[in-house]
Structure formats: structure tokens, C-alpha cells
Length: 298
Image (cartoon, rainbow, N blue to C red; front, side, top):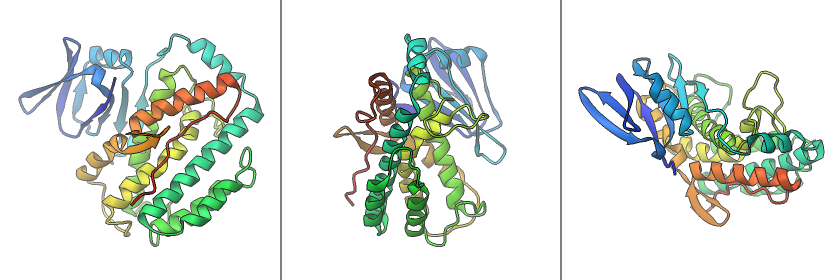
């Protein structure tokens, strides 16, 4: 089972030899078993890889993330046809009623807000209002309680914070971490036979990852907690996203969270959440959808 990732930040060559990913860098070779890798982030314009390795990565279900000139994740490569029942599962997904999708979205939003409350309990204060908001979320969240909860959450977690401020380093760190987590969710969706473009709530005609963006929501607070730590407990900061920041954020999938009563990595939790979503689609009920739960112990 895949359990680790690879973050490439310096010039190198990646090739396939004997079923392994070989990283040649500064005259030295590092070999990594493909079955151990869940994701590869190419965070430099000076990395080259062979088509044989790229093909092998797709066969192994490895998500490949590429970045732009500012080192922000800009693309995601995923395999096709990773599940033997893909047509059947996709058919069930496409046949889900609007009522079922709305109930599933209700569970997702409640899970996100409760995880935000847990983060405030760990990092700041003001968790109680979020827990009350989570209980008021109805099917489809018609009152947009998710947005109200977000305003409360960000005002408590990060001082003087504006999510759209591109000059705030905290935003750059959040975006990087979310992109890594989104790649893991998309990878798990494809592996389970679901169509990542067909969402529960997100429905953009130009977004190939609507469902990934839906299921990402309760995982976002895991990233938020890491950014809070990296920004000296949420203090406002300027500057560029450094290599040290990017390396730390690339490891967000190894953060632990609670899922179904056991502590697992965020990577494993994405896979377990997607399996649970498939079961919910098959049973046509949102009651069995399981999501990660952040333990609110300090």
C-alpha cells in the first residue's frame, strides 16, 4: 500500500528501472518502490522524467503534481480506469438523486465545520459557536451556514486575515497545502471508480475535479492546522513561499487524523472517506458516509 510521497525541488532526472523510480541527482541515485508512492510533486522546472516512468506511475495509481514558475501547484496528472467496477460505480454515482446528493453535502459541511471547531479548540478559541452552526446545517445547506462558519473560523484562527490577500504568506501556504490534499482526494476517487468531475455540490462545467473539491472540505482544517504552526501560531506574515515551507506542506498527507475510531494519516483517510462515499452511493443513504474527525485534544 502506498504510504509516502516524493517532493522534487532541485534539478534531477527521474527514470524507471526494475519497476522502481530512480532519482538521479548530483551524480547520486535514489531508488523508490512505486508501490510505496502515492504522490510525486515536481516543484522545479529542471526535472525531467521518462515516458516509461510516467506510464508506470499511472499504472501504480500515483498522482503527479506539477507547479508553475512561482512554485504554486498548477496541474494534476491522474490515471484512467483504476477500478475493475468503474462503469458500474460511475453509473450509480450518475444515478444519485438530487436529494441524496444534498444529504451527502449536509454530512460533508457538518464534518468540515466540526473539524474547524476542533482546530479552534486546539489553536485559539470560539469553538462552541461553530459546533452550534454544524448542528443547524440542513440538507444541501440552503442557508449557506458553511460560509457563516468560515467567517467566524478565520477571524479566530488567524489575526487580521483576508483570504483573498495574495501578499499574505499564510494564503500561499494554505493554497499549496490544499492543492496537495486535493490531489490525494482526486487520486482516491479515481482509484475507487468514481468520476471526479461529477460533484455533490460543486458543479462547475470547467472543473474536472468537482467531487474532489466537495470531499476536500472536511480535510481542509488539517492543512489549516499545519499552516497555523508554520506561521508562528497564525501571526500575519509577508514574504515568498520558501522551499522549507513547500517541503513541510508536501508532507501534510502524513499528518494524523481520526477516522472511524482509529488514528490514520490524512492520505489513508482520503482513501477511507472515498470508500465510504461509494458505499453511501450504493446504499442510497448519507447516514453511512464517514469522514475524518480531528481530535480536539491540545
